[in-house]
Length: 320
Image (cartoon, rainbow, N blue to C red):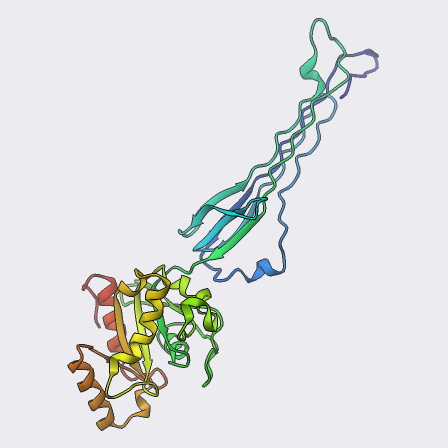
């Protein structure tokens, strides 16, 4: 509320300016981010308030919008007062933007309320409060291929061998406690993203070994690379080693078990030539075409990559 006051206009009319609107809050899918870890340290996000109006019909500046960066594949849920959550949006594309909360409308100065019957309105319209929401964020990694297998199968070593990713590796189970992403570039500049899904154990779909936290990431991979360690292979029943993890996929979601898979035998450096030939022969008898690799020394990696590119490009792959 304001009135014009000048040297020769001691009793001027109303001249209160409008307030600026509050800023909106947006979430943006940033391909450089791969986890939601930062949200464990900061949980409150607010756009800038609009600035108040002033005399001489000067309007306040609008508040700055706030953009919150999250990984591609982040699902935004609103948590209702009842405790239920509702999916608002799924940020599944790079640089996709979604508005989660709208800033309040700016108020109107008293100049708007002047009339022939009210020449000196001594009131103004207050601005509105912006939206306030409680959100829950869930990340489902989006990748062209996902590496699955039992703990200590060598998935982290393999993703390091085929990409620029450098996840922690060690000779004991559950070294990987969160999914890692690696990027593989083809001869023609093609890009393939590969996700290292932490090791799955029996009962994973029921939460054993934190499996239910990891299985959701398999949902968004186009192709699965199923890795079995030479240490875990049974020469008499090669399929048994793969069935254990496949049963967990089916228990979580039957559609996951139907995804295209490449069966890989890793750590072949632990086998003699004779032992390896016997395993490959037995696998063929059981209808399994194994890709035999040693992620540690690079044996068989090129053949596996060629097969990956071929499957992902529908059989059309560049070779050099």
